[in-house]
Image 1 (cartoon, rainbow, N blue to C red):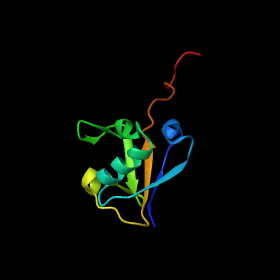
Image 2: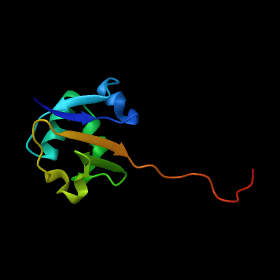
Image 3: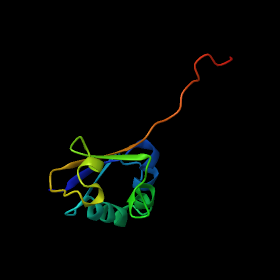
Amino acid sequence: MAIEVRIPTILRTYTGGAKQVEGKGATLSELIDDVDASHNGLKDRLIADGTLRRFVNVYLNDEDVRFLGGLETPVKDGDTVTVLPAVAGGAVAGGAA
């Protein structure tokens, strides 16, 4: 059994359009390295300067990994990792049409 990694639409160009991929590793960092070996370029979209990018949210079984240990968060077979880009913006209240 492997670890399921759910990929957002914006990053599916790196996975050949796959909504989810599988990988292995003892930590989130190792998992990302393993997935990047099969889907080159994905890691660069998730990590910068040795840490998760500011506008990328990663969840391990619905828990934000930033509160679990970041890239050193332990993972195991059967876990689900979900990658979600942060969303910002919107309409300005009272803006002219």
